[in-house]
Amino acid sequence: MLPLMQRLKALLRNLAFVFVAAIVLFEEWGWEPLAALFARLARLPLWAWIEQRIRRLPPWGALLMFGVPVLALLPVKLAALFLFGQGKRTLGLVLLLGAKLLGTAVLARLFQLTEPALMQLPWFARWYPRWKAWKDHLIAQVHQSAPWRQAHDLKHRVKAWWTAFRTRL
Figure 1: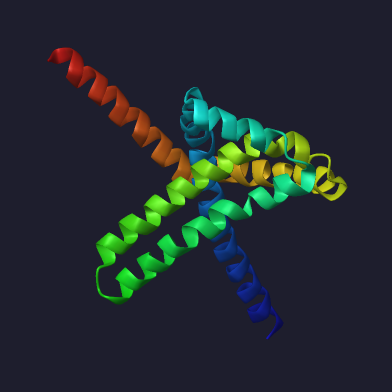
Figure 2 (figure 1 turned 120 degrees about the vertical axis):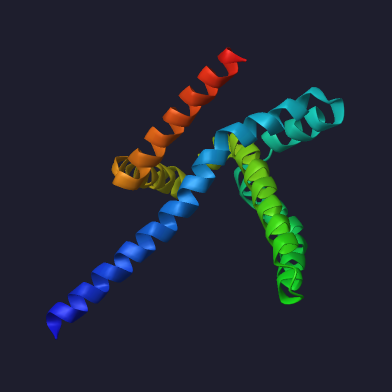
């Protein structure tokens, strides 16, 4: 019976790894480009003024700032669930993915603006490097996996084919 429990634990651990890895990879994929996209908005005077105010927040204010996008996108996510319930799966999925992209963009930019203030919180300064190390290790594991390497190779082959195709035109 013990080997069965060990196998079950291993299976659950692997499933959890895949789930967490998918979320972390999505966030990692979108974090930098989406933050850069939002940073371009700082060219607008009102947006620049808002960002300046966010940069000046004290540590706890900076932490509370992360609740704004979560609360603002909650009705959108609930609307997506409503659409799923109404049988409009495609529209619900588009709305949910859009909310996820927007939320990631906003959180990424907010983190860039508030990281110095957040690092003044002792518990954050202690745990953030640990989180970052864990996340980097997880991403390294994913990048070493066979499916990732195959997808990476396929991407490069398609890119090379597309480049060759365009040059022939």
